[in-house]
Amino acid sequence: MLTVATAKNWDITQLDVKNAFLHGDLQEQVYMIQPPGFEDAAYPNHVCSLKKALYGLKQAPRAWYDKFSNYLLEFRFTCSRADPSLFTYHCNGNTMVLLLYVDDISRFAMKDLGNLHYFLGIQAQSYPQGLFLHQTKYTEVILHHANMSTCNSCHTPLPQRLDHVFRDTRLFSEPSYFRSLAGKLQYLTITRPDIQFAVNFVCQRLHSPMVSDFGLLKRILRYLRGTFVTLLFTNTSASIMILKRKSAAMTSHK
Image (cartoon, rainbow, N blue to C red):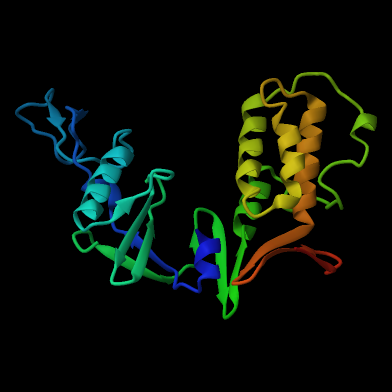
């Protein structure tokens, strides 16, 4: 969507719906214990019957989506068959494209966040000819989660000769932790195509990771520690810029 918007030189605006999940109407019967501060002293063992969704309720994302999408359809927006979170509106030769994200407009209180700058862990920086996308903050979160914020960097995400890598076949003691880090790296490949092969290679070991597999995963993290990548979209092309943090040597791949 961002590629199309940049190519057509469209304005990109970001909006936030206040208390989004609280707008959802529940279609089934849901009960909850009386919340602190609102207990009925006369009926302490009674429960509450919910009429609206609450944050943390598993039905909340679907209820919010149903409420908002039906509202858009009333105003002649069309929902994409390929992506149910994408809505389009055409009127007098003008087009509006609305992308609804996070499990997640007049009827709903909105906060105008201005030009697109950050969404779903992706940072966006606009300039007259196009758009820069990168996940620097998200990368820092991953490194912090792995306790590798200050680790030594390396030049490649995987060794050049994988067949020469020592295989420690002992099972890794924390497979859930391994899968958590690997999953975060998968999301990072949105703006880091330079690690796609390496992440895919490591993710093939998710079912039963070994100690040596975790070593490869840590190597990817060390590579991230030493590099910065940004995607550049213009109205004529797209390119990738890889910046080595320490040497400040930059290479551009189109």
